[in-house]
Length: 112
Image 1 (cartoon, rainbow, N blue to C red):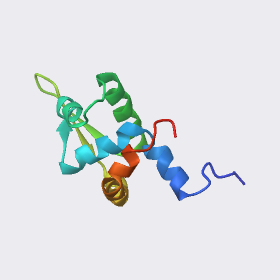
Image 2 (cartoon, rainbow, N blue to C red):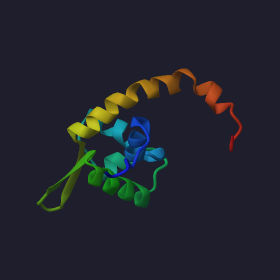
Image 3 (tube, helix red, strand yellow):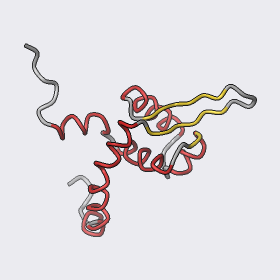
């Protein structure tokens, strides 16, 4: 019998969407497919390199679908999979909680 990799559901969820950027990318794609440049503008502060890395990880996890259109110039769009949409739905209440408590959270000293 193999030991589970995760101790609970929250542990598994954080492993899939962990980090600062994945949640912001998920929320940006909630409205529909976006091209790379549109996505980079939608996620303020993310570098091109970090966006590429995060999208690759999210695609490998099955959260994001990458559609390549073979045309000139080449066109690539990113969209949420059903799995990604379900995670976005789960993150909604967390985002609402953050909005409600943003001032208090911003007042917490860094490194705490």
